Figure: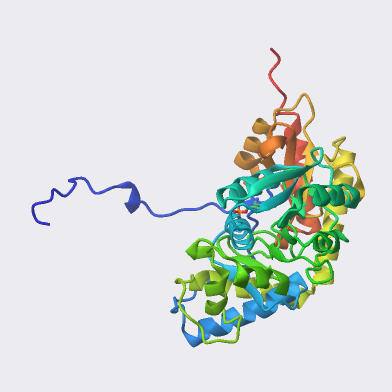
Length: 391
Ligand code: PMP
């Protein structure tokens, strides 16, 4: 190596101290972590098979059984963000040539279709207008027509702020011998979710949203029906997502743990602590707190003369609220001003709602009255300074 030239200039930027401002994160995620979660993250590293880590992983499973309302033994957390949860569910439950029926009414159905397509599946859509959920009649028609192996539904469509009702969906999907995958990234812990009662076969959540842990450790759960497919399939999913091996690492099948990858001990501490907070508060109390904050926020919006993008109250999420962007307001100016002046993050549209909405996330520790009022007040202050330039 002595004959290799060493670049003469070591990078100076890396020597600068890291200074990070504290921001109030009220976009659809990530949201702020509690002090208790932050403290847990500062503990020293442990090995990925040390008994203490294995105990914390077992604790996480117990917390997730509660959060998902399930008894599924194949319940664990993946070392990835929400997208990885989506990919793991699709890749494990679809074989090349099978059909995936994907409910599409915002960005997440599109993303799932892209992933399922890469797993070699045929894609069929159950499409509704933006912000409008599908109903059971439309679902049954699509199931009968396409005979899919898998149906993909987003519970909390964070690009529009829409909640998809899930009662009856799993039962219908099973009548047609398909498996139901649900994206619960923006809902788990903040909206009622009953994995077993609703007969959901695979669900994944977001650690960085309602749960209030950092991103990068994604809760997932698979029903016994889904497990049968995973064990009987002819082709193999990508190694990193292979739930047969991951299930062993998480000791889901009663066999000794086997190394699959090096889990981040730090993220295990964070998720374990975040789940403890959810269990201490109680799911019912957490759902009620998110609902009450959203009601207060929506009332405040009406007082400011602003409208929710989702008009039907039954389909409005508590966790993510999309506001119709008034025709005379430049959303990008508003978002930039709110960040610059107040260090508060709010968000614009995503995918099909770009330039149509502002999106506010009131999740985890930010789902409370003071934060809701603060966001309303800064929006109120900045609206008048965010007018579109007249051409
Ligand atoms: N699904 C939904 C409903 C989401 O809101 C998000 C994140 N905004 C994702 C999936 C993807 O999650 P991540 O950014 O953690 O990969």
